[in-house]
Image 1 (cartoon, one colour):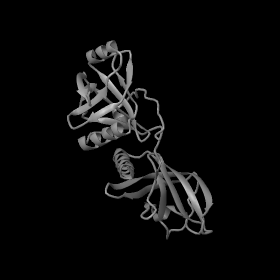
Image 2 (cartoon, one colour):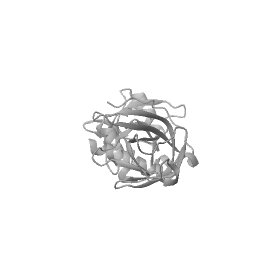
Image 3 (cartoon, rainbow, N blue to C red):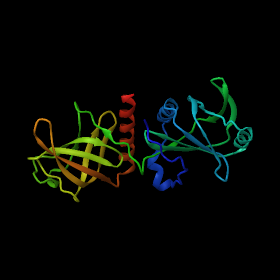
Image 4 (cartoon, rainbow, N blue to C red):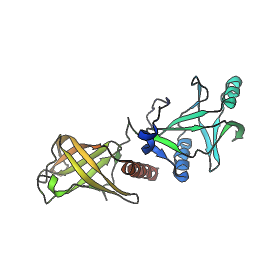
Length: 248
């Protein structure tokens, strides 16, 4: 079950937050369809004083989306008169937000609904809470660290156990190169299948020894991404979203 997140409006900065913007109509529709399928809560803000209703997404297609109306007629009237609406929901524990102009009254699935035009862009605000994705065991992701930055230069490919917008969990055998807590490793490469290659800096935050059922000892390093650029952030979001969708 998806963890609830506060459905408060995020104040966005075009310079800082463009990395979280999705403009692909296909990706937008997939995110909104997932919200509808999961019956996720939606806050629809409709006034200058940030009044809102809690609603659900009934349906979505390439033309727009249909939302359940309030039980209160006066609230519906005020919402329909508003010329700015802010949609706030969540998708895999990540806040989704976009702005729309005036809603129109409609009917969907035999009940009164609000219709909003299909948004040109939405924000997936994966900043404070990160969905941690366990990578496939059969074909794990690899983090390629430049040879001159590890203790033993012959090893530069480290297995990724999990990955999120915030960082990666890396594992290697006790005899292999040791990643040092507090150290940063620049220009690391991660090939994300069918998405592209991510490039960035990681910082090792912690390192623990773990025993496997076979009796082997492995090193597990919790690493944080440092200042990922917009391209790498977008590639990572696309990969995580695709993997989550494939699990459904």
